[in-house]
Image 1 (cartoon, rainbow, N blue to C red):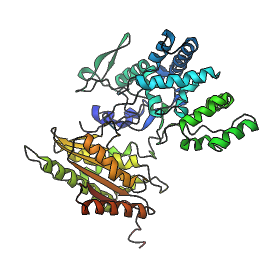
Image 2: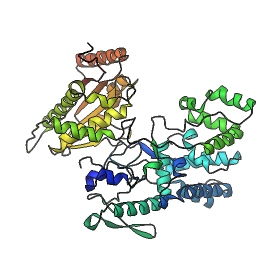
Image 3: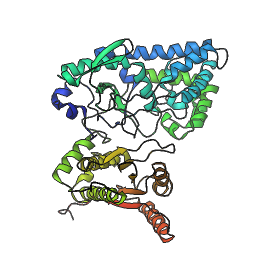
Image 4: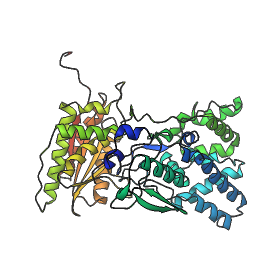
Length: 476
């Protein structure tokens, strides 16, 4: 299915859609924004007015069960475990997923690990429900995406009610609306034609940016605690919680357990903070503008491609390389590189480049009936993209910026693992240069590629794209 926003999918005027205040999600690809609990606390959407209270109540009930539990595996423990287990939320188009639009959720194994950590916190005297909102600080494999999915799971009935009203006000009706049972109620919302999953809307005002660092690092440790306590914490994690990104979560958890006052202080600071809504209009991280840009640029710069009725591996590979070379041309010669930079000239995160490539390639793929998807979880990570025609003819594409410290590792190890996991015979390594200071890293990659080819080892195709800002002709 071609990437489309909710407005394009239903043919809704974007200005009209903006009046309801909902996020115009890409129907089949997740955007790296998340439901921020602090923003949820102040929402103006009538259906979500009591949502934050629901979240707090849910977590408070888990804490009560933990307090009531006498040993691992007893009835109270099992009940707490059930309440901590949340399936992925695939209906709202937010999060960290790079595979289609599926969320992260908290599975049973991760819920058990989190429950053990929460039990330690409770035994240390910390019984505030906010510890679950801050769980990304101390629990491995827990980030904002999983917290967002957890919150979405708790308030899903509210999101159904919000979406029902929003679609009704937008005039989406008739055969485009289905009766969907959730809980004890039936809601009238659209569903996806193939999967039958409901399409739910989320107010923009409760969504925040989802950075690479998956923890609440913005919570400052300018605590109201005493100087001695600050000295203990600062000696371990630095002057601010922002530096906690580089600290192992287990180590930080140990600090919090040994000094519960630190956690109490952290919770008080957190309660006083307000979340920052992501600016979808300016789109500083390039999270949503890629699709509009891709559709516009590919319309202006057509790429005639042809595929035989019974294509082989070489045919799919040829199309992928042609699309990638066209992307290179658009970046280097047509001005599309501007989408890879913020207004202040700083390069955007790697995800902006990945989504932009996906959007451009997706538009060209649609014309050739080639499936292009954000890579699924392989068990060893996720490949950025996979193009396929049938079951056997596959090409995987990995996109990296030259400023990425794992540039060489991505070529020597990551891509090989992804290619094997996808059972793809061919892979492409798309290297995008946005940094004038990456010459040494790029040189190391080129030497690695040359050595591999010289030794006769399989070497993925490398496509280099010079996206560095250039001096204008008049200035030169």
